[in-house]
Length: 379
Ligand SMILES: *Cc1c(COP(=O)(O)O)cnc(C)c1O
Image 1: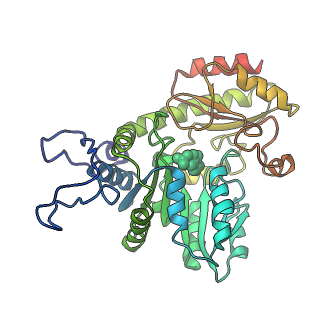
Image 2 (image 1 turned 90 degrees about the vertical axis):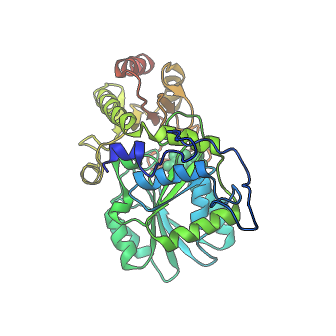
Image 3 (image 1 turned 60 degrees about the vertical axis):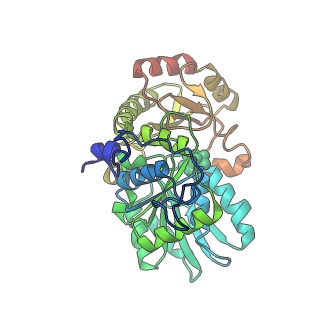
């Protein structure tokens, strides 16, 4: 089955009771048993729920995995992966990481004795120097947030295999429409399904997808033991979202390209960070590993003026000033005062998060309206 069919049919069956085409929202905590242990595969909804299972099968299908797990948020999914580790273990991750992942690693797991290395990974070979006998996990994100750096997934997977480490890829920005990390031999794919998979800015959810049965069992055990599941209504919404993932992503890519090119030619714009531009430092890897370049774009303005950047994001009318990304509507953010405000200026500027940096999640509106909006806000 091809990807554009998998988003709609992958792992799905019509409901056996009445043939309903979409799975019913099984809003139940528990299931009747005829005799102790005599049930139809469902005992208690923390462990299993038919609506959640339908979604988990869709997750597995679109990422070319075997097992999918749905969590109450993206961070709950990351948390479950970290629980595979024990005190003394080490993790190697990127220095341009989603802020929430960084906070989880450093504020929660560090105190349980897990050590983290945050390094530049645009040259995957940099990873080798940080590997020792305690290293267990490589955690990457590509494209990164907000600088849109690209990391070579296959090269990381080769290093992970060589040293018997797990490689986990946060695939939130790219989605399986653009890249499928399990095909590049990553072990775990993670999503904030809140973003493109849900696609409509109406739900918080996370996902993990793996191929290996033993790893799936471990993660399932952690999920059931820790309880970070999502409710059946939310599962229904994300399942519905996934059915249009391919058409939405196609438009996100088209609009992203038009906006990136417009900004590149704007006299007030200093730099545009979008992996589809030939000027992007990792354009070649992006071209090799991604099917398209998505709708996430960052840019800086000439003079690097903090107040001017704030003015631009305030003036935008169709782009909503908001956290988050990946919905049908366009959003804009100012990392220096929003997502990265807690990082000292010197530290954030080292990774490229300048005062004038603006991040756009280009939606699927008519691109002429988006360009006109940017034009009036920047001028
Ligand atoms: C939003 C996001 C997360 C966290 O997901 P939540 O659903 O908000 O918990 C993790 N990684 C990336 C890249 C994200 O954008």
